[in-house]
Amino acid sequence: MPANLTPQYLGADKRFREAKTSEEKIVCLQEMMALIPKHKGTEKMRADIKTRLSKLLKMKGQKSQTRHSTWYHFEKQGAGQVAVFGAPNVGKSSIVKILTNAQTEIAPYPFTTTSPIAGMLIYEDVQIQLIDTPPLAEDSPPWFFHIIRTADSSVWVIDASSDDLLETTEICIKRLKEANLYPGSIDMHSNLQNENHSLEPMINDKEREEIVVKPIYIVANKSDEPNALLGLEIIKELVPDMPIIQVSTKNGNGLEELKRRIFDSLEILRVYTKPKGKQPDLTDPVILKRGSTVFDAAKTLHKDFAAKLKYARLWDNEKFSGQMVERSHILKDKDIIEFHV
Image (cartoon, rainbow, N blue to C red; front, top):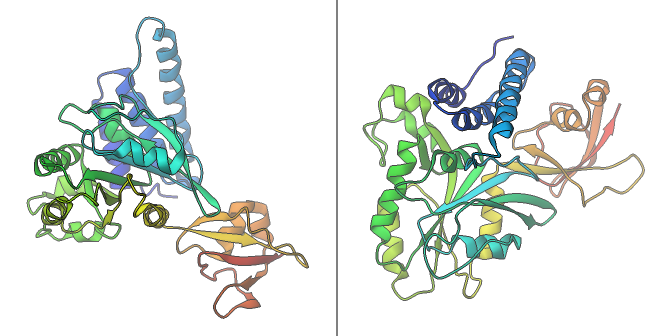
């Protein structure tokens, strides 16, 4: 079976081969493990990556008494992982603390957050992991971009009322592009095939292959301030393809909408299972990618169970109320399934 490696994986593999330090190699291997397709054709490759990663981590542990590591990686938890980033002093940590109750430090001066911290956002019946990162600046370290690259989506926080919004936004765009991270909306990947794309008309074919397009929402904090309207116009001109959510940590405006948008950015759906003759459990959904089928849901529960699956009965809020559906039926968010083997 062919490996069908993605350009993003090949880019991480190239960075691994060019890495000079053990810390850089560890980050690249962790990224490769996150990006490699998971099927029978990549089993040996995944085993090799795990072996190399294990050896490097052991070497790093032996050196940890004399050398402090400043590289960070977060294992994904919950329904998805979302990186939260932005320029200094934009209110990024305040948003993460409000949404997750994470014990992130908040102060009215720049660079309060010096290392990333994770917190869990509860949205309806799912938990989403948010990573609060240090401020994005000219000297942001490689692990900073690794966190954004391996997250499922990202939230870019700006201070809509800031006098230096133009300058800080241009720095953010510049540093993201230097890391081959292309700020874009969820459907922007196809647009990159167009050489006349509004943000970067001069991307060559080699660069285009290595670019990682991340679903990103711009969160315009302090949108209740008097000069925020001017800031919003600046952002719309600099990044016209990006969705913008206006919020205020001062009065809470827009935060519920932000939660919904974060969930939407993960491109997932929730499916509830129902034992035959019993009520469904609506507190513990099966999390699937959009476009998944009945068979995919069964496979998530157990591969042997999926192999024996004959059909399922489906309940939704539209036209199904227990009707039989095939294994190939495409599911929607909040469908209820009763499996029959």
